[in-house]
Amino acid sequence: MPTDNTHHRHWKPILLAGAAWLLAAAAGAQAQAAPRSVVAAGAAPTAAGTPAAGTPAAGTPSAGTPVAGAPAANHSSQAGSTRALRVSELASELDHPWSLAFLPGKEGILITERPGALRLWRPDTGLQSPISGVPKVYAKSQGGLLDVALAPDFAQSRRVYLSYAESGRSGKAGTTVGYGRLSEDGRSLADFTVIFRQEPKLSTGEHFGSRLVFDKQGYLFIALGENNQRPTAQDLDKLQGKVVRLHADGRIPDDNPFVGRSGARPEIWSYGHRNQQGAALNPWTGELWTHEHGPRGGDEVNIPKAGRNYGWPIATRGINYSGFAIPEAKGASAAGMEDPVYYWKVSPAISGMAFYDAQRFPEWKHSLFIGALKERALIRLQLDGDKVVGEERLLEDRDQRIRDVRVGPDGYLYVLTDHAKGQLLKVGLRN
Ligand SMILES: [Ca+2]
Image (cartoon, rainbow, N blue to C red):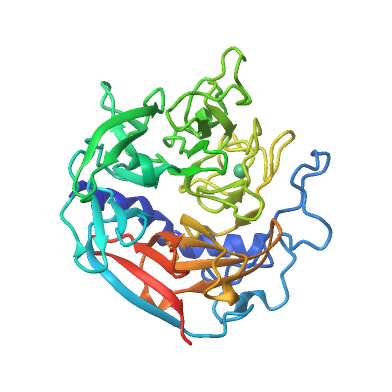
């Protein structure tokens, strides 16, 4: 099965080169101790002469300034998480599950599987057979059926949005988004309608992103990858390496930042992104947060703002998998480009993100949960406003690639593991 083989091949070089990389990383960042002891590096100091946008306030942890006790914080239950975890395996036969969405009431949970199936899981009946009416996907390497999100008016419209890799005439692929109407019995998706296509199609299997987020005004944000074509992230006439903002029906909002600018796509909200596989609406500010994979090193969390440039591949804290510098890179920061709000010097390979604003586990209040594929753990970032002030690793003992994490209506975490027999886990704290 090419999907698996290619997938593993993608990561193997990192593992083989791991020892050398760690030495280099340790030399470059005092805060770095071991691959699984990634310290709260925080927003890095801005290069001299660079505009101060995104510059951390004094006292913010920065690269080379270890947070007191930080290495231990990644493994121990600190910052309030003193209770042990309670983990239930709700499903264990999912084929590389990628994303999930909670249906209202007792309807269950929609789950995408990367090879192309949309499944419904219900507490009473378990996993149902695949839902019909899902578009054909380009299921190769990182491509396939990706994110799933419900329309804000789902209760009336029954609209379910999907993002997926779609093949073009050239044989190359790009990310596509559309919606269909879910039947009352949850067995079929009708009248699937495409509202967005990443153009031109450039991917041969890598960096599709993607995540779908509706904000409180009903705008749809699509967080995309650059198809592993680095320079495109800076090209405003392409939709690679962008966050895009649309009306729910696909129309382009009049107040998008590049509307009316010649040579620029009006769908674009922000640019200079690499491969975004996490996005969520901050429930306390209403702002979109995204995260993206760095190359080797430099996974980062951003708060994409209208018209801003997030740097890739000009500004990055990572290097190529080969060990060589990114050809276009000018440094960790660059003039006119936004620094991330947080980054990892050694990449956990992050996917999926969820803010915790439920009441059930007060210890987790104001946390941001993020899945880690390579590090095989669930990352909990403790937030103070928009700043990351602590970092903890959960579920490390399970040794599973974590693809997605969401907060359920019951206040538990729901986690998907990226394996051929992938799991849906329900995670809480013990009483
Ligand atoms: Ca960046």
